[in-house]
Image 1 (cartoon, rainbow, N blue to C red):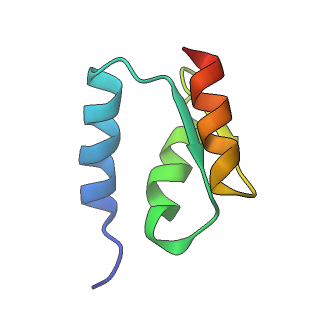
Image 2 (spheres, rainbow, N blue to C red):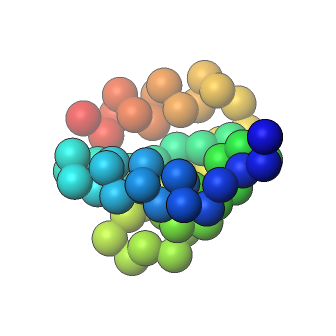
Amino acid sequence: MPVSTTHSQLIYDALKTCGIRLISALPETWLVHLVALADADPGTTLVRLAKEEEGVGISAGAH
């Protein structure tokens, strides 16, 4: 199944509606459009990760 820009936009809009402004992501193909949306939005902080464990620490520290 190809990655959908429409579904990525729906998910991103839902995250913003919930007040999520910090997104951490690993570089991978299934999230490519979602990560691009976060990267282009000045109201969202995107942290690019090298390992999953980094995301836990960043998310815990942000809250």
